[in-house]
Length: 576
DNA sequence: TTAGGGTTAG
Image 1 (cartoon, rainbow, N blue to C red):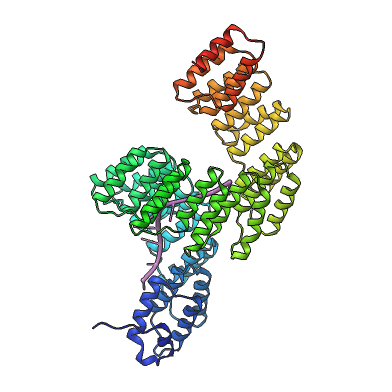
Image 2 (cartoon, helix red, strand yellow; image 1 turned 120 degrees about the vertical axis):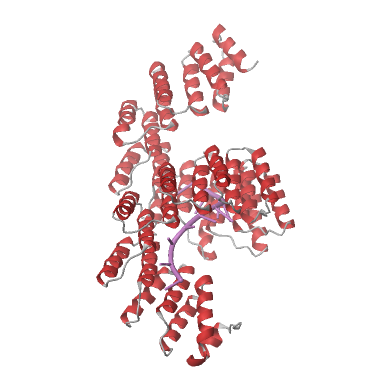
């Protein structure tokens, strides 16, 4: 018999002995969808405590699950605590839910103390309990500990990991940037006879696409059909985004066609990905057309779609147009979020209109939005770019006073800004300070430092720092090499710069357009035209061309009176 | 009744 659900408030008013069937349905529904308000969940708990007989442990667990669905982890833990104070029976499932809440709140220490209690009370933790704990460790940047716990559990046969266990760990590794380790675990699970499912493939494909290893991702997509794992709309969206990022538009169109043939309707994610991709390419008209098309097809743009469009305008320097998108979306009842504001603030800062950016920053609390580290970092960059380093300092202090936790990205912004504002001493003491605060410098941090030292006449120190990178466990990337090569060129050490360039290639660090242009400009400055010719040919062979700085340097040389035969020969190569 | 995946910003 169908049981008609009465409204939540009717249920609360009703007599307990008449409510049980409705109550069970209501709880099941709320555990899946969550309550409309947190207060409703608390009212439900109070009502449950009054019921005679007391609801079962399953029903209390459903109430906790409803709070997890609402992402109200602290509230769930406080209900869990009340349950124990009131001696309401709990079981391994209730404990596992509580452990999950601790992990979501970044309190793995509490989660482990709950595990201890489970053991003490004679319950047997299951694969879900341990999977949740492993995930908690990964979230808290403890991938090494997570891996060792997982291995120990498998070795001692405490749990038989299932596809969700593997997916949880693989995803955790991917989100922390360890794609290679994740792929190794993916292969390990296959060897151990645990068949990956659509979720597994989506996790790995996502990470590979993010690392621009789209060919590898496409290989996995083929593997899916070979092993009978059906792709879903997310798989298509991930691959479409991966292909957009490497500008393989023909393949994007192929995948969009294939999707439709297989009856997967492009959804708001698909269209937002396309709007973002066109925006990043500067094709703002195409981005607008995508939005029109999606509306025609009954897929309504959301805040992400409009944010992508606004960012597209900002990248073209058209901040006022981006601003009018904000009005459009608000008019359609789509409220801007933190990211909308961050995009506009960045747009204004890039146009050097920092005061407009600060205005927006001040408006955020009025819209119920709290600025994030990204907001502060963007405005700091704006102040530094416009030479307003004193205001940058004040703003930095205000950020710390607000309790915003520094991250490496913001430290890099501070370092770069201080150097570019000729505050080398302050930059160096900031570098020491960040390390004292437990922030490990990134390879990009060292590139900034090397660049700053070179520009401040401290080539020797930059060179020593560069040479010390391997001891610190860091592999110089193309940017780090470029900064060092530029420093050497500026000091007339062309031979050493070229040697470093060869070393870079030998170390499998692929040269980009930036490093070629840097070295070529070095040769031009020091009138080593023969070497410049060799480099230009090599650069063109790799599909790169002279950038604005190199071209204008060359044109300047042509205009000067000191023209010589080699220079003319070189210019002919450039401007046939 | 407990654990897993896709779109935007520095």
